[in-house]
Image (cartoon, rainbow, N blue to C red; front, side, top):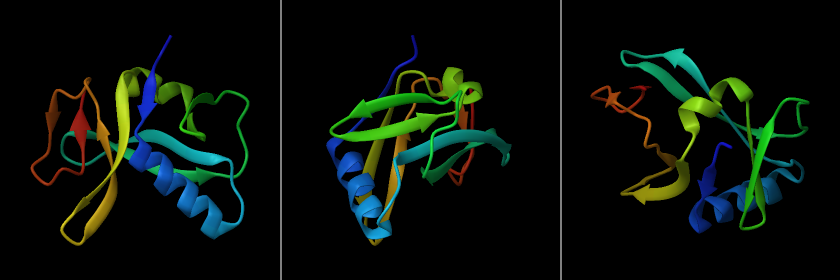
Length: 108
């Protein structure tokens, strides 16, 4: 069974955005072919669940993952970090073998 964990900081940000939007079920995560290393993460907020979504719940939030992304995301931790003026979701993914220099894409 695949596993994905959600930090408290990520859960707080997901709650914050859903509250601001006024609707939504949680965070949707997938991957797409992109960049110089192979894949990039795709994030959106889920307003409905697809029949084949795999869901992970922690700290009162739900993350929806497309089945085709499960193998690449298995064992990952979704975090929300602040670095200087930048704030973003970060994936601590044990499956990543290489990342491009700009950090926009990865390979598994």
